Image 1 (cartoon, helix red, strand yellow):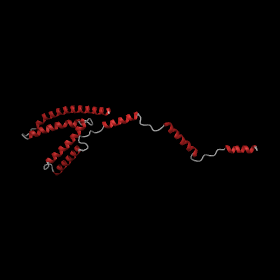
Image 2: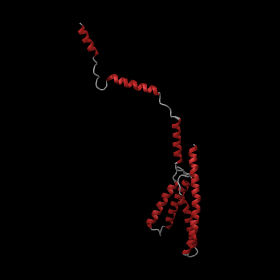
Image 3: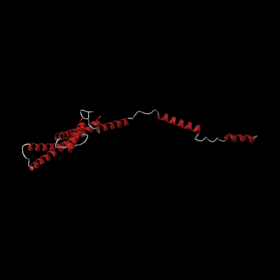
Image 4: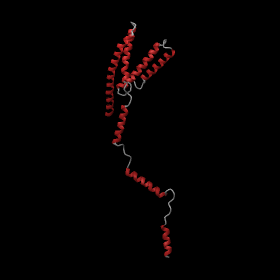
Length: 197
């Protein structure tokens, strides 16, 4: 009698092998553990103040790096002017400059005007420095205007270019210094305005 009782107890103590894949009991434990973690963490939080500050700083940085818009935005007037000037210059060059000098001059003037507007706007807004280009245009224009005015009345000797060249260099240096200072001021103002938003 005692032997049959001990055999029953031994059979009752044997554990059943776990089914492959962890079984239902393990899956239930994992699910209950995940729910307990969610309960401990609570619902998703709203963005913290630090995250809001970082987002605002990123927005200010994008604003500081944005290209300044033209007064006639969204019409790309300067770009269209450059394109039309390039087409006119190419047509004049293809058909021979002698017969289309006026078309070539108008095309080059349109290209110069469109380029000057874009570079001047970017420079004065502190977006990108175009100091050398903006400082070299007035001396070239002055030199050309003086020579063309003299050619209309007299035959211009070559030595006239020497004093004009000295004036060109002095004018370039003066404009370079003023334009560089203006760009640095505009850049500081742009960064300050972006940081103050």
